[in-house]
Image 1 (spheres, protein in one colour):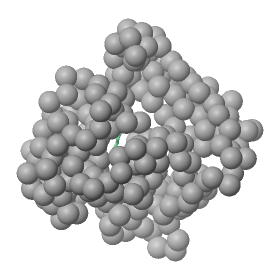
Image 2 (cartoon, rainbow, N blue to C red):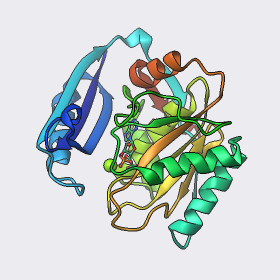
Image 3 (cartoon, rainbow, N blue to C red):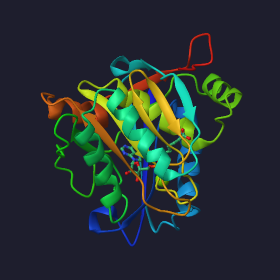
Image 4 (tube, rainbow, N blue to C red):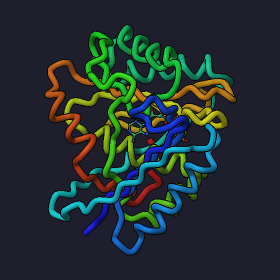
Length: 257
Ligand code: WAQ
Ligand code: MG
């Protein structure tokens, strides 16, 4: 049996009352590890580089073991770029290579750049037209109920590749769940943590890290999931938010793509 442990933290009150998003986290853990994970999440929210949270919501729920789906960790590659301008150009090219129309790719990126502040979730955008498809507005769609199926091995594999920090580790689990979703073509992401400039483009083909997708110090970040036009949105949103997923570490090899 596993428990879903979810955290969202804001400043200026609850997100629902207009609070500013500070931090979030998602784990799927055995009962014995729930308390430590919840404590670590509270700690993260209270000492975050986006500011100190004054609203923290931590939810713990049992997930029936027979509902858990397993998906593969994506192969990873890092593109070193000189600055965020070059990085954004490379990201657009990678999105097109993954099957997104050129206009839809740049419209999706524009949505991220136009955000006045972070959403706590992701925007769903049509891979053909670039239109925003979800109706979650300033909330976005939060992907939840996912973790690595073997956290110790996963940590070892990432450390060996020089990807030891929590940003890459959490993002690669999220990207694996998202890439396996029905109707998702690709994802574009960069962090809203001011000190973290690396972002990525992910699709079933792989997770491509790009070392600068925003200028250092910017608190603006987010996620766009590009979706096939005929996708059943309700089923997709249900999968992203509720279906428990464990991400399997790489088999053999080091996961290079
Ligand atoms: N579901 C949907 N959207 C989310 C989620 C989630 N569970 N978590 C975060 N977001 C959205 C939300 O809009 C955030 O403002 C934004 O993404 C950025 O979140 O080195 O750290 O947690 O390979 O700041 C990527 C590169 C790091 C990692 C991404 O994102 C690497 C990161 P953050
Ligand atoms: Mg963040």
